[in-house]
Amino acid sequence: MIPADLLDQLRKKDPELWERMRRMPVYVHQDGQLTVDLTKSDNTELVAAWLQHCLQEAIRARGWRYGIDYDTDRVCATVLKNIDSAWKLIGVGYGSTEAEALMRAYLSALSGERI
Image (cartoon, rainbow, N blue to C red; front, top):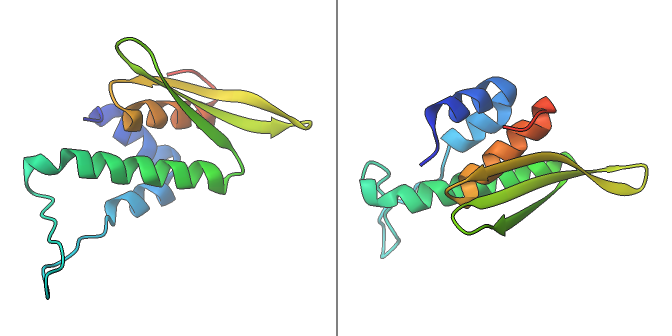
């Protein structure tokens, strides 16, 4: 689960990404197609996967790179930017899930500070 304050920061710092995330595709059951009901609590993993996908796309669109690694009890994400032909660390974030860690790293890269 992503903390509300992080979502609020994202809405303020990258409104375009915020709007993209809010338009998660929902598949309606027709002729055997999958139905996804985002109102059910068991879709938490699906929503986190969509969030992570949107963050990865936003990072790549800026020409940046990202990495995800695992610590003993948390996930670490990094964002890097090519500066003078070398990839430099511009954002770091930790979280309980890949999506949360990547969001923290992305926000850190946007603001130039670690969160």
